[in-house]
Image 1 (tube, rainbow, N blue to C red):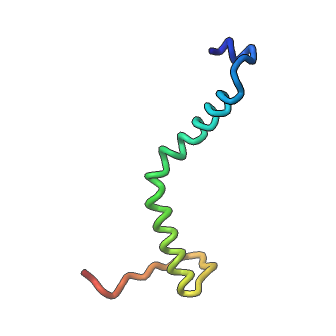
Image 2: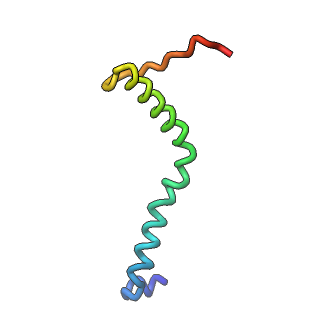
Length: 68
Protein backbone atom coordinates (compact mmCIF):
# COMPACT_ATOMS: atom_id res chain seq x y z
CA UNK A 1 0.00 0.00 0.00
CA UNK A 2 2.79 2.46 0.85
CA UNK A 3 4.33 1.79 -2.58
CA UNK A 4 1.01 2.69 -4.21
CA UNK A 5 0.80 5.93 -2.25
CA UNK A 6 4.41 6.85 -3.07
CA UNK A 7 3.85 6.28 -6.78
CA UNK A 8 0.50 8.16 -6.79
CA UNK A 9 -1.62 5.19 -7.84
CA UNK A 10 -4.17 5.50 -5.03
CA UNK A 11 -7.51 6.86 -6.25
CA UNK A 12 -8.19 10.31 -4.87
CA UNK A 13 -11.70 9.31 -3.74
CA UNK A 14 -10.25 6.56 -1.52
CA UNK A 15 -7.81 9.00 0.05
CA UNK A 16 -10.54 11.59 0.63
CA UNK A 17 -12.78 9.00 2.24
CA UNK A 18 -9.99 7.81 4.52
CA UNK A 19 -9.19 11.37 5.59
CA UNK A 20 -12.85 12.12 6.31
CA UNK A 21 -13.27 8.99 8.42
CA UNK A 22 -10.05 9.76 10.28
CA UNK A 23 -11.25 13.30 10.96
CA UNK A 24 -14.70 12.22 12.18
CA UNK A 25 -13.54 9.50 14.58
CA UNK A 26 -12.62 11.81 17.51
CA UNK A 27 -15.91 13.68 17.15
CA UNK A 28 -17.91 10.44 17.10
CA UNK A 29 -16.08 9.06 20.13
CA UNK A 30 -16.27 12.22 22.27
CA UNK A 31 -19.81 13.33 21.42
CA UNK A 32 -21.66 11.13 23.96
CA UNK A 33 -19.44 12.40 26.79
CA UNK A 34 -19.70 16.10 25.87
CA UNK A 35 -23.42 16.07 25.11
CA UNK A 36 -24.33 16.28 28.82
CA UNK A 37 -22.43 19.57 29.19
CA UNK A 38 -23.82 20.91 25.93
CA UNK A 39 -27.41 20.33 27.07
CA UNK A 40 -26.71 22.00 30.42
CA UNK A 41 -25.30 25.05 28.64
CA UNK A 42 -28.32 25.24 26.36
CA UNK A 43 -30.64 25.15 29.38
CA UNK A 44 -28.72 27.88 31.22
CA UNK A 45 -28.68 30.02 28.08
CA UNK A 46 -32.42 29.61 27.62
CA UNK A 47 -33.13 30.59 31.24
CA UNK A 48 -30.87 33.64 31.01
CA UNK A 49 -32.49 34.74 27.75
CA UNK A 50 -35.97 34.40 29.23
CA UNK A 51 -34.90 36.57 32.17
CA UNK A 52 -33.45 39.21 29.85
CA UNK A 53 -29.79 38.41 30.55
CA UNK A 54 -28.49 37.84 27.06
CA UNK A 55 -24.86 38.82 27.74
CA UNK A 56 -24.31 37.58 31.27
CA UNK A 57 -20.75 36.64 32.08
CA UNK A 58 -21.86 34.39 34.94
CA UNK A 59 -25.06 32.48 34.20
CA UNK A 60 -27.33 31.96 37.18
CA UNK A 61 -29.43 28.82 37.47
CA UNK A 62 -31.94 29.16 40.29
CA UNK A 63 -33.50 26.15 41.92
CA UNK A 64 -37.21 25.62 41.80
CA UNK A 65 -39.04 26.40 45.07
CA UNK A 66 -40.91 23.10 44.73
CA UNK A 67 -38.89 20.25 46.18
CA UNK A 68 -39.80 16.64 45.61
